[in-house]
Structure formats: structure tokens, C-alpha cells
Length: 398
Image 1 (cartoon, rainbow, N blue to C red):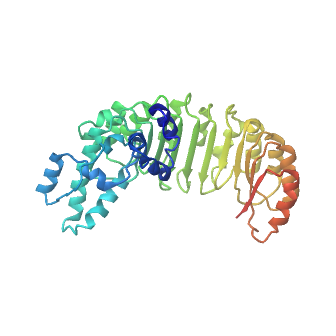
Image 2 (image 1 turned 180 degrees about the vertical axis):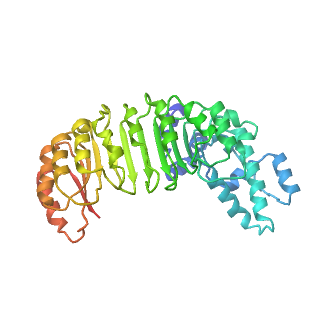
């Protein structure tokens, strides 16, 4: 087993990218396994002490001159910083803070900034192609100005961030990076900045867009309109908001005709009128429709399912308000190809489940929201349902 070719071994270990424990075990097999595994294991920063040991002498001198003495007993075996592909900015800064607390520094805040700067200089200089950045908190370290940042960020494919990050970050990305495929953004500002607008506008291959309204005074109209320019590539759209004061322009979603997944997490049930415009829109590739919290009125949602239910493989409707079984009947009628269904059922649970199993014969998972759970005899219902579909995964929850 240990005599694989390097290329074959690399292909195998690539499959373990999301399994750090097994990856770490691979490091210990022998030198060849270690050399192959370490590049994959260190795509995420695994150990701040090791990263600090990789700092060049110039950085260590700067830190020493500012009262931060970094002593490392061993020279790193690898250039670990060069392997990094995923960067969580706030996590690096937090770990620096925990590291320096052990030194009982009298100027902790200043020292955190100083050491973080040198680490980000190292990363920007050594990483040839960063894939993903998570930047969810503001920071005083403007690492986009460091040498090597343009090359490091040029081929970024995933960005998770807040809209109120320092403008220089979005400005540089809009100039050098046109390869973002997944963008998650929490919008804090009432007005979208020009730099953020430019960044969105120059992403021709944007596939997944997740937007969160941080407060009830934030208007998402402009930012969703910008994303609408990428209608040919967008396949997944997620929107989260509360709608207390500012409505969310759901009608714009009608332009995303290639969507495969559409998810809403709306807290306040005031978007019936906006969704009213969507009920007649046909999304020919839509496979997943999820309402994590509130749902539109049944009659509106039923019309939407009439137009789009045939291709759905996943549907979740955790509705609130007065319950009736009209939506259940519509699902059975218009959604024959469902694999995963999450639905609220309050009356005739067993009969409704039987209806789904007869009409949606490809069902693999069925999750039932019921305010009466755990006061309903779910064991009895499950036992009876298993006779109809032994392989079905059935879950009851509040």
C-alpha cells in the first residue's frame, strides 16, 4: 500500500482534504507521504507557532525592535505559508492575540497588530494562489497593500465578507480578481460602496450568491441588482433579512433564470406582495426551494409550485400562521420528483405522509415540523410509514 507513485498518492490524499485527522496520520507514514500530505493538510493554517517560525529574519528583526521577541528552537521543515489556500482573517488575528497573551505584553493591542502585519506580509508574499478568504470583521491590517498581494488574490474563487471592510480591500480585488464563483456578503451599509459594486460587476462567472441584511434599515436593492447582471452563471441564491422597515426586492430574482437552488431566510412575514411577482416566473433548472423560516401565503406558493415543482428535488417550507392542507396537496400534485422534503404538518400526519409517498415516489428523506412534537406518537407513525417505504429517512422536529 505504501508503494504508490507520487501522482497516484497525491490523487488519493486529495480526497482527504476535509478530513484533517486522517491527513495528519498520513504525515507520519514516511517522508514521501509526508511531503505529499503536508501540502494538502496546510491548505488551512494549522498551527500559528509553526507559521511564526516561518517568518523571515527581516520580520523577526522588526518584531524584536518593537519589543516582541519570537524565539523558535527549530527551523521549519517546509515553507508552510506557501501551502495555504484558505485564509480566515479574523481567526489569524484572534490566534495572534491568544499567542501574545502568554507573554503578558503591556501593549497587547499594539503587539497584536504588529505581529499580525508580519504574518500577513508572509502570507501575501508566499501564497501563489489563494482560493478562499473569510473576512467577517473589520481589521486595521490592510494586507492588500503588501508585496505579492495582487498575485496571491488574483485567482480567488470564494469570498465571505462584510460590506464595511476597508475600501482598499474591494478596490484591489476588483482590479485583479475576476474569478470569484462563490460570494457571501453581510450588508451593513445603507448604500453599496463603489468599490464593492465594481467587484461584483467584474465577476462574470459568479455561481453562488449569499446575501444577509444586517439590520432592518439596510436596503439590498442595489446589491441584488448588481448581481442580476450575472444571470447567465448564477445557480444558487440565498437571501436573509428581517423586512421590518426596508423591503427586499424579490422581484429581481425573476432575472436569475438559471437558478438551481433558491433559499429564503426571512424573519418577518411581510414579503407576500414581492413574492407575488415570482409565482408566475418559470425557473427551468430549479431543483431546490427552501424557506428556512417564513413562507409566502399558500395560494402564492402553490402557483409557484405549479410552474416550477416538476423539476424540484428538494423543498422545505417551515410555514407559520393558520395551517391548512392545501400546500400538502399541491406538493403531491406538482412535485413528483422530490428526493428531500421538509414540511409542516399539523393534522392527519399519517395520511399526509402516505400521500407524499404515493405521489413522490423518489423521496429519500422526509422531515416533519410539528408544534405538537414530542407529544405525538411518532414511533407509531414511523413504524407504519416504514411499511410503505423501508428506506425512507423520516424525522420529526419542532
